Amino acid sequence: MAEYEIPTIDYYILFSDDPNKSSKALDYLSHACQDYGFFYLVNHGIPDSVFESVFKGISDFFDPMEVEDRRQYEKNNPTDRIR
Image (cartoon, rainbow, N blue to C red; front, top):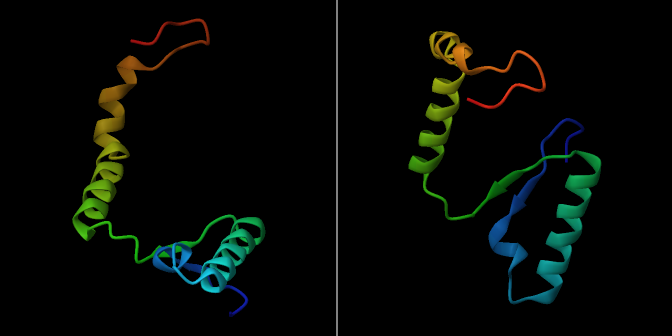
């Protein structure tokens, strides 16, 4: 693995019927979590359309126009109730 390459975890192999493969995959997952704190997950079965919806939701949430509209609901101090 290159020095700055994000680790890639194959979800399918984590649940392999081959105990050696799944054990190695779990070790690699542990390494990725401990040494990097994040990783790419492949072969998870989640459709691309779900990711597209999530990214759109994130983009919409942080849209500067939307942020200004939400400011009316922000708390001014820790004792304020959530509105």
